[in-house]
Each structure stands twice: as C-alpha cells, then as structure tokens.
Length: 635
Image 1 (cartoon, helix red, strand yellow):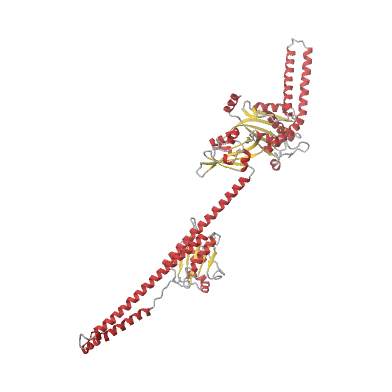
Image 2: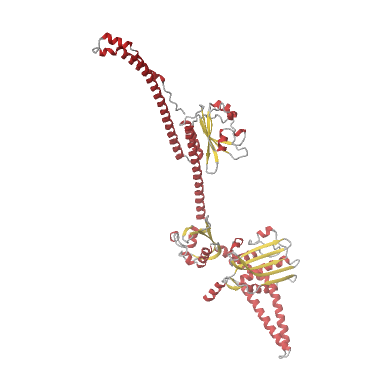
C-alpha cells in the first residue's frame, strides 16, 4: 500500500537560509534606516561588530529549521493517516458494491481479492478453502494479481504437519490472523521461499474466514515490501475478511432459500397437476388450499372454499360420512383412512379413497390438516364386474357340493316319509321321522336361498350383520364341498358383534379362500382351520395397520396345510388374473376378495411357507354399540 509521504529537508533548509540571509542584511544595513537618530560612524560600529545580533540571528535560524522539520514530519504523518483513511473508505466502498452485485460466493471472493490488489496496493491476494479430506489440503478458489505465479506447483495443508506450519494452515487451525513480515528470513516459510522470491513477495498475512459452525477458508495477501502489515492495516484487513465471511454466509443462505422456494414451487406445481385431490385447513378448521383435482371432484370453486371453515364447507354438508371422518380426525388428532361416496354439486356420485392426516410442527402441536382424495369410481366399478364374474365361477364350484347335499336331503326325506306311511300314526318313531322331514326341508330352503343370493346380478346395500352368524352359516354350507381327505376345524366365537357389510359378499370371501385352501391340499389331504375372534387395535399400534382406525375389530383366520407359496407368488397373489392353479381358475378370486374386504373398510394379509401351508388374516371393524343404538332408533 503506497501510503508513505516523503518530506523534503531542502524546503525547511531553504526557508532557514533565506531567514538567516534576511537577518544578516538587517544586522549589516538596518542602521541606515535610523541614521537620523545617531551619527553614522557610531551606528556602523555598533551593529556590524555586536556579537549579540549575530548570535540571535544564528539561534533563531536554527530554531526555525527545527520547527519547520517538526511541522513537515507532522504533515507527513497527517497525510499518511488521511491516505490510509481514504484507502479504507475506498476499500469499504468497493466491497459494499461487490456485496450488492455478488450473485455467488466465488464472484464475491474474486472481487475482494481484486480490491486488495487494486485499491489496497498489495501484490497478490487469493483465497484458500480448507478441504476435509485425509490430507487436510488447501484448495485455491480464486486469486487476483501476478497471474500464473506461485500456483504452478502449489501444495499446502492445514494439518498439524511440516506442510501445515505456514501462515495459511496456522491461521485456520488457530482461528487468528497470522503475519509473516519477512518471507526471506522466516524459517516457517522456507518451503515456499523460492516461489515467493521469484514472484517478488516479501511479506504476507493470512486471515481465517469463518461461519457460525467452523472455519472454512482463509484470505491470503502478499506484498512486495517487508513489514508492511502493521496493526492498523491488519485490523482493516481483518474487518474486511469478517465482512467477506458474512457475505459468503448470506449468499449461501440465499442459495438455500432459493432452492427451498424452487422445491416448494415444484411441489405446488405437482400438487396442482396431480390427479389426486388435495385440501388443507389449519388447526381451527379454516380451509387454506384446494388443488384443481379436489375442486373438480367436489364441485365447489376455490373462492367459495378457501377461507371457509371446514364445518361450514358446502362439500362437507353434501357428504356427511366424509365430514364425520374429518371431525374424528380433528378430535383425536390421528390419521383416518377410508372409502366414501362423494356427491358433487351436480348430484353425481363418485367413490373416493380419502386420507385425513394432521401435520405437526416442531413443538408437537398440530399446524394444519391435509386431506388427499382419489377418485376410484372406475376401480370400484371394475371390482363389481369382477365380483359378478367370480360369482358365476363360484356357482360352478359349489354346484357339485350342492347337488350332493340335495341328494342326501332327498334321500332322508324319502326314507323318513316311507317309514311314516308304513308306521302307525300314533307311533312316536313316526312323529320323530316327520320332524326330521321338516328339519331337512328347512335346510334345503336355506341352501336354495344362498344359491339365489350368489346368482343375483346387482350390488346389495351394506347393512348391520352379525358376523359370527354369517361365518358359521358360510362354513356350514362349504363343509359339503370339502373333500373327505381334508379335515375341517372350526373355532368361531359366537356373539362377537356387528359389522356393516353384505352377507353375500362375506360368503363369497369364504368360498374363495376355502376353495383355494382345498385345492392346495387336494393331492395329499390336510387340515383346514377357520377361526373368528375379537381384536383390539390401540392408538399406539395403529402405525402397523395403516388402512385401519383404532378400536375393536373382528379377526377372521383361515389356515391350510397345503403346498404353500414362495415370495414371488405372495407378491402377486392379489393381482387380477394371476393364478397358481394349473388346471382351472381364472385368477380373479383373490383380487375379488381383496376388493370386498377393502370395500368393507377392512384389511387382508397373507403369510405362506412352501411345504408348510398358508394363512389368511382378515380384520373388519366392528360397529360401536352406541352407533348400533342410534341406527335402531333411526329405523
């Protein structure tokens, strides 16, 4: 930095000589001005030969010279201070401009290096980044001045080693500015001395750059003069480095915010364009956002929904079952998943799968609620068609067993009727036979009723059904179709409760699963076990059952000892048209079962081991007793 002011002693000496000459002239010739006061001879003798006058002139000339030299030195220091202040102000001005213009940290670093060289007057400035590799190496990011010099074979480190004892490594390790006032004599710079001498560097300073967490780089400045980095200059450069660190940190935060904004915009665009409907509302229930798919599905424009309470929302009033699920989520602050029938503003109905979930903030409080809905009308319609096809397939499967059962019934009727005709009417045995005829006839009527139900082509509305009775009836009907080499074990707990469902569909589920189990054991025989029990799903374990809600459920388990299935078969077991049967079957049974259970708000899972057997577990939600009473009152 060229801030030295060189004062000229010649100026002070010239002024002193002129003053001495004027004094001598005064001593020699001043008496002529006062010739009228004294005789000329006396005045001449007195002034020219009086040593007092000459002593005064010499002493005052010397004093004047000293005063002028002191004044010149003061002026030099003042001008030097003013030059430093001017350079500092210009440096800060240039740095402020660089901070304003900078778009990325590399450009800002380069501008700071340029300011140090062009404004500060130093030879070269560069920035080294501290790498976190095994060698703790230093990587030059940018520099200004002496292009191509010093970095030809540059290798440095900030580790505690011989290579890291230089100014850069020391400043990064100690988090303090490090100054080498004379590179040619400092033993810690010996390894780089030849390169510095070649480039004309005599002194250097390294200042660490830090963020809130760690030191990440260092600002390194070389100067052509030794001992140039005094206290004031070091303080100025340290402040500049601190401002650079702050600027880099702001640029990084700005870049992070920009990325977050871009991600948010991308997420918003995806949410807006997705086929799934999305609606969000805050903790108090005020609607914040609805995407286009939800607006189309609900039929309510955004300006009539956003800002409105979910309790007063038009779509909530049109769909009470869906609104009830929303209320339960608001009260329990737990996720709800279910299938509902959604009616839009025009009265059109859509089958939807809805997921209502709270979103928690860092303090654990509910910040908002997010509802995602998917229109599954086509899927439900396809499931209905597949179930109808499967009904016909099930009729063919059951026909052989039904015919066999009817033959037995007719045989019993025939024998008992024959004995009743022959026997005396008063005979008690005849009366028992007639009672048996009545019992078998009623059994036949039940079979006919089941057969008609299976053959109906329309969907039956769900109703409250006693699940224990439905499973017992289905098991009894299926018992006749199971080969004699398969042993049937039943463990059906009576009076388990009531579910909302369709008896014909539950019978269909039993038919598919038990028929598949029998097919798996038809070659070697085995055991078919049917179990029905209660199961409570607590709130803390609901994460294991993502498609269910906490509360009482009924658990149906069907286990066989057949050939089992491998992992590949298990992964595809519920796919439509996939089958492991080699001689018969269309591969629709288990996909139909899956659809029926899902439509009943339940969940089905399967576990199988090759050579051991297969177990299906079905969970169906029980109706709360209070809800049963309300339904009875409504009826």
